[in-house]
Length: 167
Image (cartoon, rainbow, N blue to C red):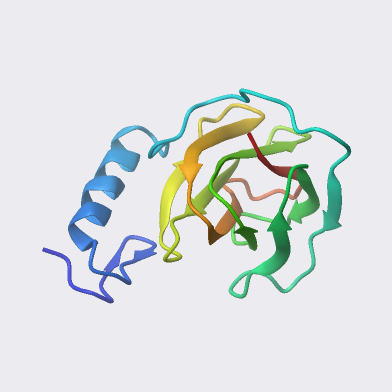
């Protein structure tokens, strides 16, 4: 059994769900990096109205850039993954229960991925299919603050657009 604070590869276990973390990591590795915990692929709706737009602001590798509260329209973030060592963290607040849509799109041949945390800040949904765009809809998440992590598996830089919205 994994103890609190123990590292599994690049994942540091920080809560009592350590056994689930080990199982999830094994599943993610066996599927080539794709782990969709409660995630449906694709967009099952469109956000009404124009999106609220942000630009990624460094440093956001360890401290998440706040995107505020999600309302009835999408939020888009224009960002850049400078290399496979760059990680971009964002936080979003869900003020009421909703399905959460996340999409990551970019130009070029790089391989980007994203992860979404649970309400405790533990990343439980990882999306890396090798396809572009990467997308996921998480059904019925309660009011909470979630973290979204964008990363790259490529050494060359890539500009991206992260879209987050209610569905």
